[in-house]
Length: 421
Image (cartoon, rainbow, N blue to C red; front, top):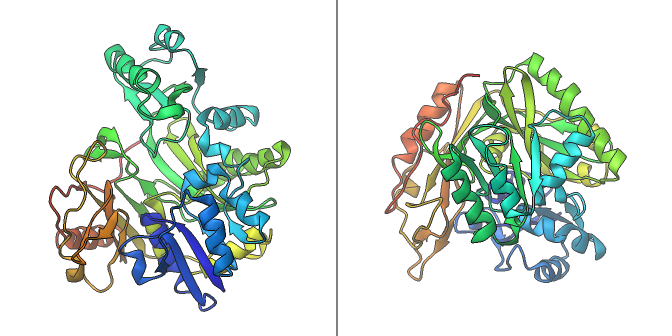
């Protein structure tokens, strides 16, 4: 089969890396890809958000299956556009993609179907929001309604921080139209965890759980990022919790999709807070999480192409997901200054020095004029290791990230260390 993966980050590199292992994949393309993906797939310089360009590419290459990685083209309707010209596509359509493109849409869905989540209120008027500062206590969770590359959430500790965040989002519009509506939520306490699920119109199947680390600094301090590392399986989960999640979240979500006419086919990412009063949904995303995907796909034993096809064909119930028993740990190397402003074009050294069993997933990399691999994004690399134990996976990942260097490189030192509920 000829397969096209759309996207250019660490998530897409992990998907390409896994698809390359399938004996049924005869040609593998990635648009636009990055410097690392080029080792696993043929990169084609078409932007993930150039919907007509992606459609033309799929037709030119006679693609049998397209796999959409990022959230923005999904929200733009790329699945609808590809399917309209007969290209089988893995990912939710534009209607379903509102689950990530609008936080208010998801909160309404969760409330309507009695799925546990935080209390919330929506605002489109800045003064009304300022008048309600502290409505759910402190810290105050302030979210831009639309897509903001994982950065549109502020946990304000006091009124000064809250007013500054509101002014950024609704006044200065730092996230553009994504901040025209704001969702304010109560702050949930506990341990944050992630569950990725394959979903078709009849079935929802959770993957092995993972834990992500959103804050830029150790000790869960500093601003939110797209994710500074992950590990799988998450130590937060046990059989009792999984059964509770199935009854209270997974089954009601699938039933809600069916009741609301949401023909969801793809990956549903469920962000969870595991607290003393049980699990609650923080957010839904419409695609593989990043960097959870890097850890989860390292452990998947089932042919990923088989899974993608089954989801597209509404045959997910026929697939048995098999997992390696080892632990995977991914540590992200980020550019200096991220998640704020940062410089690009920093030469990366040491990539050839890592151990043979380490996979370095490229996220924000490119080639310069001299053929050097250089930084081109905020999150640059995901150094990922498998270990027979949780501690071994962590040790291998950290031993190897120390072999890599670029000017300004930063990474958290305690990925894999679990907080307490």
